[in-house]
Length: 428
Image 1 (cartoon, one colour):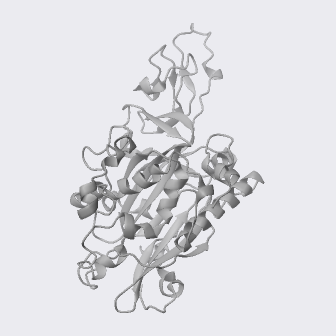
Image 2 (cartoon, one colour):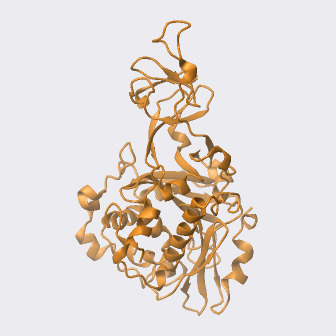
Image 3 (spheres, rainbow, N blue to C red):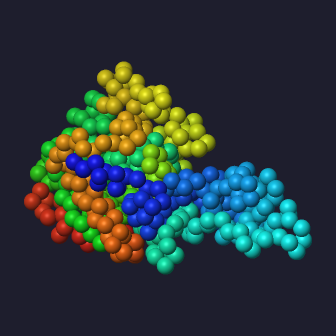
């Protein structure tokens, strides 16, 4: 349970808020690279409570500017992206990717004052199919993001996003809670049929997470007992401020010999504002086998992002206005939740809590250990920034981490057995 005061401290993200100031010490995803075409249409971006507009100029550079023109405050989303700048359609003022006014056609020659105009513009880098922005003090800019999944070839990874209509923290908490899988994502009637390797993870068990704080957030191991006395251990990484990485290495074949594939996935829950989150999800393969178009389509479909399942602004068709299209008959016979799509199931329960959940009414259990440690990491990081220090993960400490999973002896220590595997060099 969190106090009301602490709940406010780590959920609010606008400029000047404690968590907002912490968030601005990291590179944060602002868009996918595919959304921005050179001289193409600009897009709206809502990020940490700020209304922005993004565009790619004629040279391929990305600009991320405050949305409204400095002249009469018209939205630059309507602007013309042309000849290395974004021109407001109201009176023609034109800005470059750094927010500088480079043309002021409404003023007489020699009497313009464009050199005095500067829109807020945030630095950007591109990595892993995403455009990342840094919104904090220039002197505190960390190294560019370099996650394990971002450095594989484009043929071996993909990234998608969807709009989640709730506070970022309750969404992230679902990401570090590994035990809801056996309930929320369960398929009815197949627990006995999935008695082999592929079904172990989705069976309900009374087990506990083991969690350890790290320089970048925390690492935690979640295990499931095997029928032969061994255990299936999956190692996750929580990377500040809102990233979770998890393995997808096992469960790809009917036999244990066919089971393994060097693959991982993960999510980032990026606050648009206090009550809305842009959910980014990625999958990457680290061996020779690329991700096929069939694989991509399947991942999109089970994630609730298939054709016709999202609007142009990434809002789910199965949203809270229509009760996530829950099907009560399917709930009895096919899926435990009655909601289609794994990500949609997650979003449904998280959005059902309300825009910002009141954590003073919680009653936490042993399986919430990773959530509790994560909250403490966040609260400590907020305090560190308030005191003038540098928070965890705003550096290169996470560069080598890699999620992994293996089946090991029931009495084995996952740190000893898997320690050499949960760093990137093991995957390369």
